[in-house]
Image 1 (tube, protein in one colour):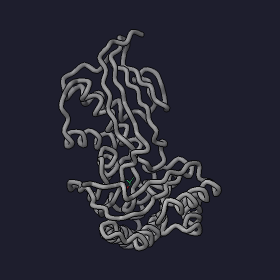
Image 2 (tube, helix red, strand yellow):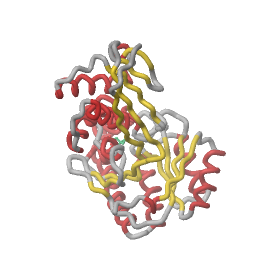
Image 3 (cartoon, protein in one colour):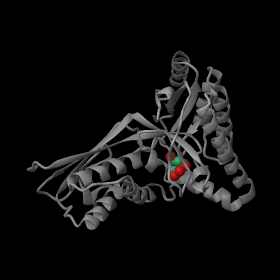
Image 4 (cartoon, helix red, strand yellow):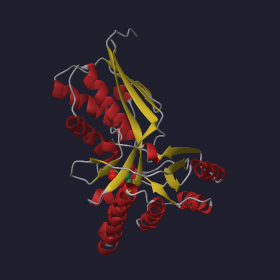
Length: 317
Ligand code: MEV
């Protein structure tokens, strides 16, 4: 295969939802952090063969790619059509450090990086609104009924306070603390858990909507805690949010065990993060030293990977 010279790249990163997942689908606010320790890059080059893709899921002709890459296929066709550009002879390489299907926004991050790469390739300017328009299309395929938070935070340099349907705000953070993220090693099932919450809303509307509204209230309090260095209060809010997510049926034994482990090891609070039913959890610690102790304990108790994120470094100024 002869690859011609012209090439372009696009980048994005993973995300960690601090609080508000699932409720955000129903119009409540959520807070999320860009997870820059987990970057993704997409490179596009010209080939003389029909479009090809290389990724950790699959490498080969794009038209034979599995369903998990259906969003990339659709984005390629849609953007090619909208920009009136030929997309038949492109080679797409996805290099991702985001653990896939772990509630860290892998699908949205790949879509963000891909759209950026494609617009770079066609030398076409891309503003944020247009980027999000395409990533939202892609996320509908990946997750069915996305709130849009993953699309926004995986392309943002700053923590995000987001309510569906409104523009997102870069969040003001005045807090010194450490967030530990731990991977259960179990693939998360965001589409399924979002659909199950929808079933709960249908079957027990009052009770479920009350839980969802409570998560919204906890999120507003968390925003305040982040602005006023109320670390211990923030920890309690996270643990309360986890109880609400349990009520929404999106936790599981592995997540509950790691949440319990973190709290017993000195975390100020802990909860699942993202879609749940596998995937990742987070815990809050007041010092890096405590964060390391908690991370070690989580690994001992079954987590397959941990990351420590200094919240004080999330500055939007
Ligand atoms: C997934 O990262 C977050 C959920 O709230 C779904 C969504 O907001 O699209 C579970």
